[in-house]
Image (cartoon, rainbow, N blue to C red; front, side, top):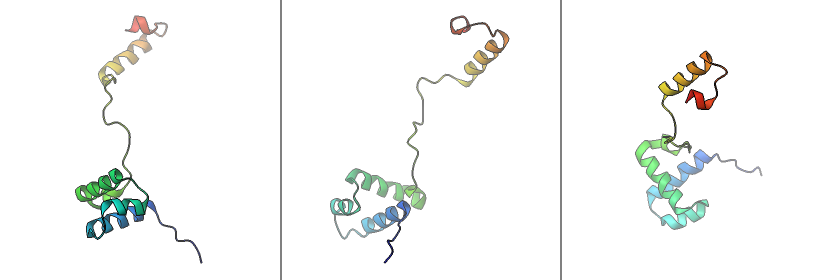
Length: 93
């Protein structure tokens, strides 16, 4: 008998459907699927907010970068470096 291949998306959908039925507790359901309760509640919240698209993997990259420089400043530095290739970072600053 071949093993049944189940994609992560199918597992998440099955988890959410069982969670919405509320036949067993969230703790037991998470234990059955091998995930933490925090992950279980997050999956359920994403599904309620976004539907099936909420079950897709979300980017873990930060949305903002506090130390990033503005595009205008970056372009100005690149232009200055192109005009004066021998200048180093201290002089460019």
